[in-house]
Amino acid sequence: MGTNKKTIFYVDDAVTNLTIVKNTLAETYNIFTMNSGALLLKMLEKNIPDLILLDVEMPEMNGYEAIKIIKGKKETKHIPIIFLTAMNDIESELEGLSLGAIDYIIKPFSPPLLLKRIEMHLLVESQKRELIYYNNNLLEMVEAKTKTVMELQNAILKTMAELVEYRDDITGGHIERTQSYLQILLNALQKHGIYTEEISSWNMKLIVQSAQLHDVGKIGISDSILQKPGKLTAEEFEKVKEHTIFGERIIEKIKQSTTEHAFLEQAKILIATHHEKWDGSGYPKGLQGEKIPLQGRLMAIADVYDALISDRPYKKAFTHREAVTVILAGRETQFDPLLVDLFLAIADEFDAISARD
Image (cartoon, rainbow, N blue to C red; front, side, top):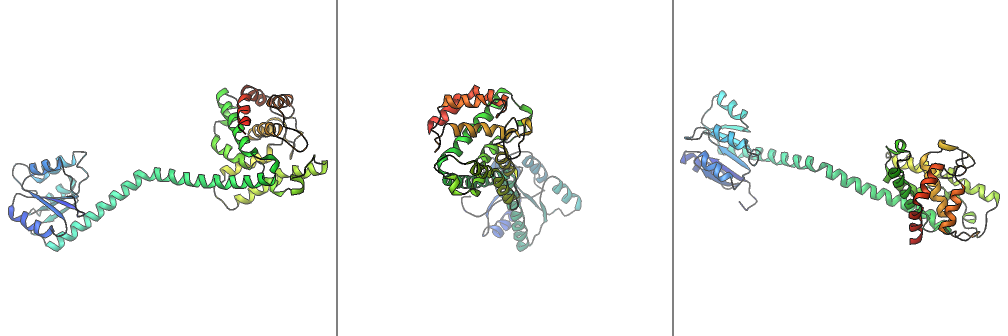
């Protein structure tokens, strides 16, 4: 049974029938003949054929008894069985089909017709196995496809974010660090049970992924402002503030060409609200307190901390301790007080991230 031919077992107590069927099928299939149901069951202990041709009227164990045993075992119940018999009454045929046979061929048979019916049934069984395999592996296939799409999506986001970072070259590494800070804050929210109800439905991975785009609106800001080697004028700063509005427009434009909006919605929230302040003095909308989405309040701490510990043309980088002091001073004015308290509890983790760079 090591060839590419399909394997068929034929069981009949009549030697003449065994010979005729073997001669008919030998060229096309691996055909094994046996003269009793007991011998068939013994063969099935070590060999599983692609199909069984089974006579009904046999001594000791008839075909109906044999098929009941075969269909009752997990290892053999899937084998397609065709009754090949001289019994041609409707009751016998119905009984055979009800026991699990896939066909009922009356002897004497036409060799070409027997070959054709076997070919048809083997094709059906092959298609059934393919369908079962497909169904069993569908989840794995979907997960693999989803992973591929997510990787592509993340690569696009990363490229867009890096495009901004390359233009605004004073903030090298800002995007990756702020993602890390945001992840730390999200983990701490869960660990300390803060805003539990609000974050219960969040896809944390998606939010961190979307954070790459929080400054994407800077694409719309002039290089002369972004790369100015000095402190911005009030007018120039007003232009910079528009990056939140530009960012929202970019996300809306992308949404028009896509059907998957979950990560874009998160990106839009982060873009539009990470410069809002707890006391309402932030931009672009002057939102106050919990009217600022929690995602934006979290991003504000991550963004400001990184700005503080980074060199700027108009200032030297603050130490970690100095940055923590500034954020603490912004409690209840610039930042959500609960989140500031949370930040203080895990500030050392922020320091570890900044130290890596």
